Amino acid sequence: MTYDVTIITVRPGTHPDALLRLQQQDSGVAPAGELLACWYSELGALNQILLIRSCDDEARLVAQRAAMLQSKNPFGLAEFIVGMTMDMYVSFPFMPPIAPGRYGPIYEVRTYALKPDRLAKTIELWRGAVPGRSTVSPLLAAMYSATGPAIRFMHIWPYASLDERQRLRTKAVADGVWPPPGGPDQLLAQQADVFLPAEFSPLH
Image (cartoon, rainbow, N blue to C red):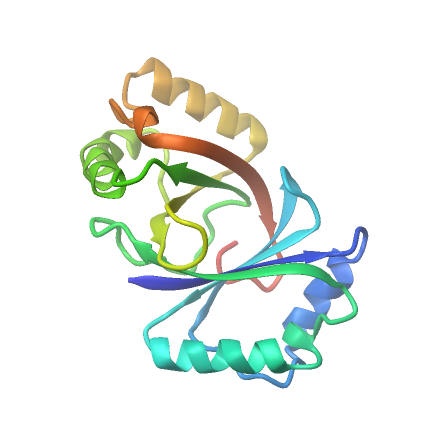
């Protein structure tokens, strides 16, 4: 399964207006794929809006991106945007497709940079460790980027609250089910951001 992951950085204090504009979808460019998530950052890199769409037609996605890049009003947010990235991510092969639903409302999005040639090793380590970690709390997504700076992978963990996040992460380590044995040895860098869902986000 592949996903279109767009991160839009907006001017400070404008994300409520930007989310309303996204809900209205007045960019003039038809989106490719089903919208799965529209979230805004709460902790970490601030003033960010994260969009995740399913991607079952890569040719349509490329055409949509080209149109968006040439639009005078990308995503209907031209007056708010100060930065934007658009990447395609490929799901780890053992992960089920992301499905809309209520899993949060806290979504921790962790983006890691891997050492060269360590992607296959990381996938296998996670294949073995995720079932045990999922007994503590669910993993929504684990996927690697097929575009942009290499080699990155993103994993997304939903929690009921920040307190619950801390409790469950501590429990996973105490129970010995996380991190995957040898997993940290594959990494070059780590980033963690916490997002909250927009009112209209299918993933809530």
